[in-house]
Amino acid sequence: MQIGPYQLSNQLIVAPMAGVTDQAFRNLCLRYGAALAVSEMLSSNPEVWDSDKSRQRMTHSGEEGVRSVQIAGADPELMANAARFNVEQGAHIIDINMGCPAKKVNKKFAGSALMQSPDLVKEILQAVVSAVDVPVTLKIRTGWEPEHRNGVEIAKIAEQSGIVSLAVHGRTRQCMYKGFAEYDTIKAIKQNVSIPVVANGDIDSPEKAKFVLDYTGADALMIGRGAQGRPWIFKEILYYLETGKKLAPIKADEQRTVMLEHLNKLYDLYGEYKGVRFARKHVGWYLNHEEQRQFRADFNRLETAAQQHSLVECYFDELV
Image 1 (cartoon, rainbow, N blue to C red):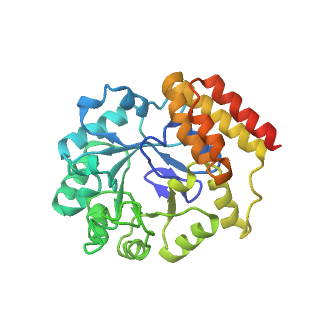
Image 2: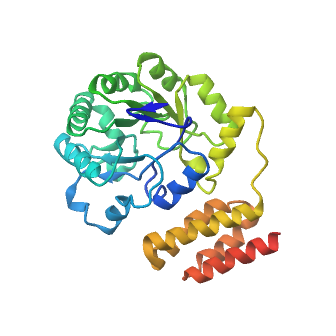
Image 3: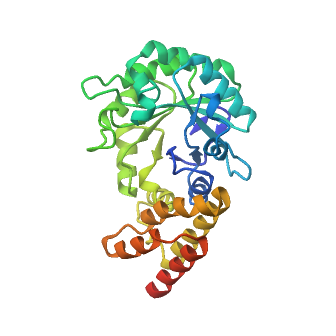
C-alpha cells in the first residue's frame, strides 16, 4: 500500500489509541511486522502542547519506520497550525482524527462528532492538506449513528480534498465499541473512492483479518484493541495471509522477554512513578485470562519498577 511517497511493506497498520500507542508500544508492533504505527491523538489546541502528556506524545527520537502523527480538533486554522507544528517535529504523515467516540472529544465537536457536519469536514481537510507538504490521511467511523451512516459521503469529500488514504472503523459514534463492527459500509466506501481504504474494527485473529480483507476489498487493515497485550498479532496475521496456515503460539520465554522489555521502555519513557502505573494496564492485557487474575491483583499493588520486574520474572519461572 502506498501513502504519498511511502510504500508500506505490507497491509497491517497499528491504530492510534490514546494512552496505549506510545512510542514503546509502537516500536514493539513494528518489530513484530506492522508496516506503520500511528501515534496517539494530539490536540490541535496549542495551549496543551507544553503539558507532559503532549510532550511525550510528540517524542519521535528513536522512532522506527515512517512517523504518522494523528491530530484532532474542530477549528480548520488550529488544525492546519497543528499539522505544520508536528511536521516540524518530525512527522512524515499527518493523520486527522474524525473517528474518536469519546465524550470529552465529541463535546468539543471534534473526533467522530465532525461527521455530523460534512461542510466543516471539508474545511478542515482542505486547510490541513494545504498547510503541509507531507501526505495527509484521515480516520473516520461509518457515521454518527446507525440511522445516519454517511461514511461514503465523507469518504468522497476526503478524496476531493486531497486526503491520500482513509481508515474506517466499522461502527458509528453512537455504537462506541459495543456490539460488533460492520463491514458493509467499509466495502461501500472502497467501491466509491479511488484512494486506499483501510478497514478497522474487531480484527483480533489471522482468520478475521483475511475475512475482512476479502469481504471489504480494503487495501490494508488497521488493528487496535486486538494488539493490546499481543503485539505479535501482526506476525501471526502476516504468516496466515502468506501461507494460509496458523503460526505456532508464542513461547513463554519470548513473551517474558517482550513484557520485560516493554516495562523497561515504559519506565524510561514516563519515569518510574508514571511508568509503573502505565505498566499495570499493559500487563493486564498481556495476562488477561481468568487463571491469571491473582497475578494481576498482586502486580497492581506494586509501587516500584524493581518489584514489577521481579514479579514478572517469578511468574514465568514458575510457568516454565
